[in-house]
Length: 339
Ligand SMILES: [Zn+2]
Ligand SMILES: [Zn+2]
Image 1 (cartoon, rainbow, N blue to C red):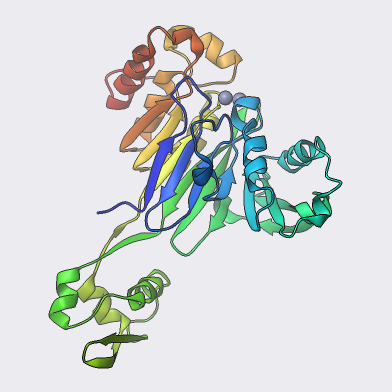
Image 2 (image 1 turned 90 degrees about the horizontal axis):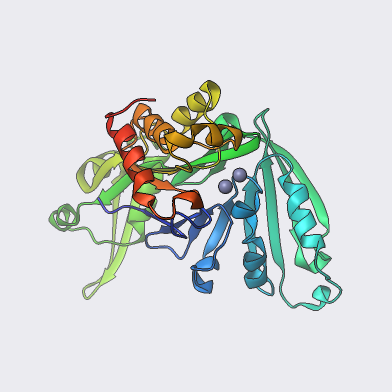
């Protein structure tokens, strides 16, 4: 299948951890964590619609200024998500600048900022350029199962983890992945076109089989229209497989409750981007800094049935031998060593 999401770490594993997720066929992207974004060109940053921040240690949040700088003066809205206290921290970032002239801007840039709390509610606020980024409270939203974002084709789920402070792990889950059998369309004498998007939407919503689908097209012989229904079309022209799942987990200490939460969040992920900050020989250091070792990360990924593990967030102490971290994570992931 052609994947819908194309995730890529922004930096090398010793740089700030962040993963950029590009969408196929759409000028759109998501970002997990907001540290150093230097390698990302402006056009890629401007494609972001939602940014998910695990926590506000500098290596995960220092890129906020670059994002703000690029978005300023553009008519657009950007959503930011983070752990408890995040709205205050965004407000403080904004308060560091002087905004006396922005009310003259012809366009408005709006930030919608949300923080996930342990009682599964999302606290939200809006900051608009036109009003000098003064905080405007928004309604509290309940978020069952930690689902921060629920769109037609995918959800983004978050899990609160312990990093001495609350830190969020994330999972991006495509609902169903649907490909069109072009040869079947031809056999049925049907064209491609926007009706296929509508059909996919109806299938995702589990519309009843007899729901009508209007297929309208124009060719050299004129206008055509056919009425079909969802059930037969779904069986004939769509190839439906489970959607992609991409998970991102950084900055969490190893203990039973975190392990349970991480496994639940990343279960069966196709790709898991995960911190492997220290080697087992430095496990004590890992524990006091509330990070995972490479072995712990590999073991958790294995327990969760993850298909592909991408280690990142390497401590600079291993800059001479980054392969040692990869080898240790890989061995644990393969089941050659255990926790
Ligand atoms: Zn941290
Ligand atoms: Zn970190």
